[in-house]
Image 1 (cartoon, helix red, strand yellow):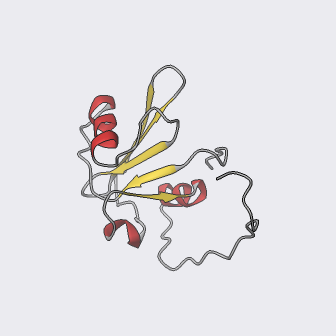
Image 2: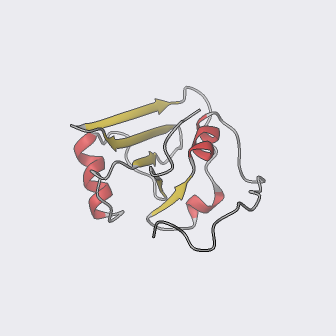
Image 3: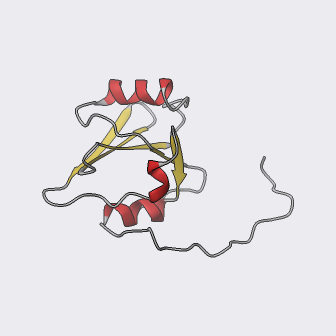
Amino acid sequence: MLTLPPSVKLYVATQPVDARKSFNGLSLYVQSVLQKSPLCGHLFVFFNRRADHVQILYWDRNGYALWRKRLERGRFALLPRLRTVDGAVTVEATELALILDGITLAGAHRRPRWEPLHPLCP
């Protein structure tokens, strides 16, 4: 299970990305297509066209870190909304962990969570 602080966001690219891209190619994709800063400390998740490769790029204090996984059989079950929205969508760490474990989230429903009336942080 991924354990990340709540301040870290996970951005999943909605369009397939070439699995041959590495640090420079993915960071350029984050800047030009997703319009985000790859140095912000958030995680950027990329799937290839066949959905059998996943790459996660993030900045780790003094350099880029890249986590990759290739399935030998099967495909990752992507969220349905990933195929309809351009750019990137944010997901929670638990959702990403379930996708990486091969669990389909298509029929999953999220219960409403409590949120303060006036958030402390904008």
